[in-house]
Image (cartoon, rainbow, N blue to C red; front, side):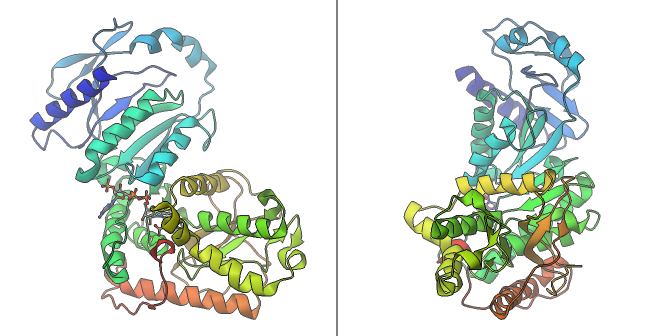
Length: 445
Ligand SMILES: NC(=O)C1=CN([C@@H]2O[C@H](COP(=O)(O)OP(=O)(O)OC[C@H]3O[C@@H](n4cnc5c(N)ncnc54)[C@H](OP(=O)(O)O)[C@@H]3O)[C@@H](O)[C@H]2O)C=CC1
Ligand SMILES: O=C([O-])CC(=O)C(=O)O
């Protein structure tokens, strides 16, 4: 551990000695090579800038040595690391050819609380499968650079066999190079005295910049999951700034709300939550969101046939889901992090595995072409299905009644107002902010 820390300091100081032209990646990269457990620790000269990795533990005698050009043109040695060289038969491993192509995943706000849960799930294989090698790119800022190193060290120390590369950086144009998934979590939290319009502007700017960077350098089929709040409008801003990426590839996370709604329905019905299906969250990830008890089911039976207490459904249940985040913050002193990470995993899995027949999942997606009559050109949570290829389609045959439709109109109005407020970031021209005063992010109450 001590060696590792020293190595970080050493590489950090080498980086700081380089001119900014020589130092396009602010941060450094830890690489495990392409075979299980092989931990190469080297300076590497990659096509997109310099990646610096941790020096080998000098006390260990290296088993394999190879040469890699260093940034200054000199040649330095890179070595596999002690026990990793001896415990795996790398040639045999390569012969099996059972590994899938590496996927590259960016997590922004990587030093934050949600990421602290999510990164370890991604690295473990539980999200993309236990035969899927992973590259993790941790995106942070000057503020969090030290903390990002700490996260990277913990990832190292976890010895995840599928985790082949870890890099940290603060320049989205470098970190987004060729990425397949962008999980955009980093955003400024709303503090006391910060107007909602100001938060939309501050965070919107982050997502406008990240949209531009994704557009320029990410895989053209990158899937983008926006978590940082206000996530619907941030996702809209992001996709508007990335015209070369299909707009369908952008999602705002409302899966946590869906999970919360399922749990409350299960509690009321006295069943375990695996019995609750077809739960839609409509609209904004805010206190106007609409958990849909009209179309959801308990053990295949419409919720309203199992729970006859309509007053509870319309009032208590709905408000409980809308306010769940805020209530948790009051108790915990911080916002939902572990359950948010779990819901991000659920949301990704819903896109990469076929949706069970008859069921659906909620995601905040662009409304264009929706069959429900919701205004075009906003990011709105709706019921979706996937055949497991990363894409989704809208669900047909959803019922509406006056109660549900009126609630949907309220959350739609809020999102249209948010959109007007960020016109300067979506390319629509001037912004005009007339946000309804009575609605909040889940954590704001
Ligand atoms: N959609 C959903 O269901 C949910 C969304 N959220 C949202 O997810 C986001 C992250 O939550 P969480 O991980 O708990 O938050 P943390 O505060 O723990 O981490 C957030 C990260 O955001 C980064 N950040 C980016 N820009 C700024 C800025 N201008 N000022 C301060 N920090 C900034 C910080 O990293 P760095 O310094 O590296 O930039 C920080 O590490 C929040 O916006 C939260 O509201 C939370 C729960 C549920
Ligand atoms: O407002 C927040 O940061 C918390 C949040 O989104 C939630 O718990 O749903």
